[in-house]
Image 1 (tube, one colour):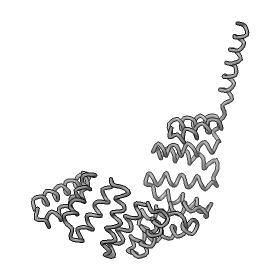
Image 2 (image 1 turned 120 degrees about the horizontal axis):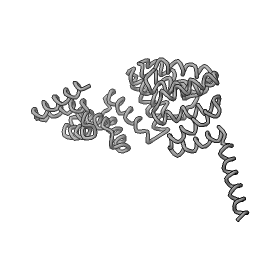
Image 3 (image 1 turned 120 degrees about the vertical axis):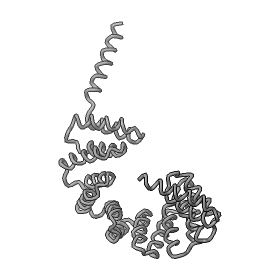
Image 4 (image 1 turned 180 degrees about the vertical axis):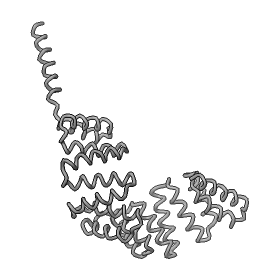
Length: 295
């Protein structure tokens, strides 16, 4: 009995020691494991404990900032990047991370500034240029975005998304042949890149390669059957090919997937009118207008 009590005493002393010996690095390691298992709330708690033990532990702020992004709390993520940057002001990844969070909350001016800073500190990271190009695209600076995508591709020519992104900007500048080349390259690198099929279909439609556009829509829908826009685009192409019956089916499917898709009602109305269903066309036009008025 005495030996048993001694054993218990040693056991509890050991456990107490282990708990007391838990370091900031231990909590970060635990948080990383929880992040990998998608336990973002548990990971955030561990990183917070690490920071409580060591308020100058930069890596803990970085991991917690990323976890806040997992939790869609971008403002909290930015706050952690702010602290981390005070501790490590020449860390390009921190500027990039904060820029990405700012982009998510649509603070594009701040996002561009941070991407500029990240690139100034490290001009060999392709994703920095790609992300800056994306913000420029959002802001309508298509020429500027193309320059950034050019740079990203020069650093890493094997990333399909870089060609797709550049193709989008070229499309907006009505450089349809150039866009087609980039979509082709994206699909060469990734034959299952569904958005590249859609981008290529849009470009082919503009140069009146309607059969080629239809083929690309079919491929995109085979890869993703639940995207309303894919059916809308295919319906538009079929309408131009004078296949009103099947265009109507595609518009019906787009509306089935998204009952609030005002554009789909408008396009369906034009087909119904051509097919002699004037009452149905009027009904769809009224529905489209009602949905637009709700915005």
